[in-house]
Image (cartoon, rainbow, N blue to C red; front, side, top):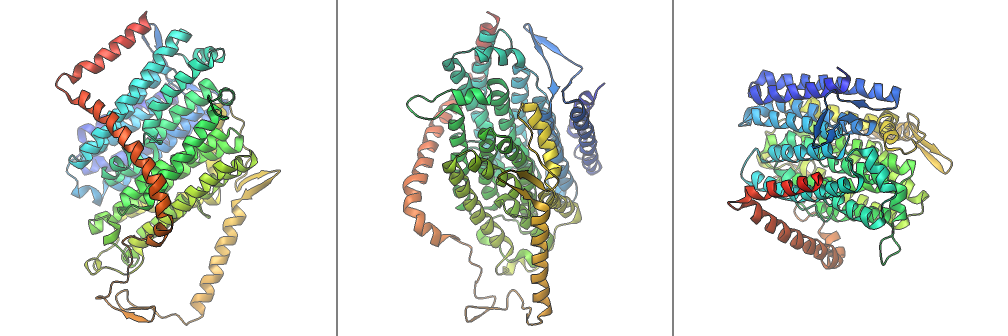
Length: 620
């Protein structure tokens, strides 16, 4: 038994135990240990891959209609797997204590979480197109299960997702059948060799079919409208897991097709008709649009969970944009942002869940002033929003800096501008999030609010600390990125513990963060030694020449960016909102048609019929 066998066996055992005994509090705590074991095995597997520079193959193989199913873990799959298991560990830890007492079915929660991890590992270890499709479907249905477990609005949002996913899966299946007919094999090496000499029209068709299917899971524009509602309705720790890594399965699959099978050089050689673009530029602009539109939709949200879920869509654009630059720095920045964003989103969803646990709401118009009641949750959210905004000293700054630098170095100023506009929107919206939740005036109904128990605050703070540590010493995360880059066949970036150094300038976060901490320390010393500050109660304050008391509402939250929207409103409504409405109408119509077919009495006939026709085509 090798380490990949051990990893899958441990994940399978965790899933079975959680579905059988997950309602017992002790078993819920045991799940944290199970994920810890998986993480240790995955770490050993990563060390082995780094030493050999190759892959590790699962000991079990199958043959389906002459096509062998192979599962083999490369550095790329391992990179996504280590994030997956880590996100599950902290989500399970957060859910195992006090949070679980108010939940109806812990068995379903923990079982669905473990099943998602198992399905993702199967997908990430796929060694051919058929095993990739099997893993893809397992991930889709496992995601549906974890989204729909609460019923009601959550089930409706999950159903909307699975309609999108089924339509995407059909596109993927058609592309696989086309490649089987053309290459005579579904093995990655054979498909890669066949595509070298394939005509551009065929490669375009395959790429667009795969792209449409994988973009659904990644929630890229225009296939993005399902994600925000689905993730926001998912139970808090599960939403942290989904937000951290689930959508990145789409990015992983895109990397397999675009980088490993087709190749970045071929993408740059495939011209888009009636334009001066090539296929790589097309993907880069799709990524840029995905950065801008969902980010500014997040700015308008008044619910904390919806705000974070919309950012989950936008941040995926940075990942794909960096990779489409096709330089070592760009690919490093895109992959590093996968890790950095996972930590940022996880800590933010956990912090928002802590607020929901204590106040019963995530409505930003009904919160405020909680910093004195929930200081640890405030610190966790502060770390998360700084990282998500891409500001020092947190890790999000490093990955976004690498993406920005690669765009500038490779002469892509308009794409750089789009990325910068997205970052501006992120800064504005995450400031709204922390201001309306923790700052301003405390509401009377929240005077007796207390911090969440240690079972919830400790994992939240550990993830927050990880955001800071990997921002201070990004070389720790770049070690994992380098392994994934090697598997992609892209040259690794020259990096150090503190960052990168190039002939056109570099970044050393050891110096940046140290100077920043020193400056903050000097400012704090001056403030506290000045002895001129006076502490006042949140309900007995003074501002703008007026004394403020409980009967005067000073916390300004509703329509937070009214001034900004007044300036950009006409342009925003005339272009972004119109485009969003047009895309939404088109996708809603398509999904309604698919939904109608899927929910009819004889709906069970459609999927087997399509699969049967596809299998007959492959057989012939």
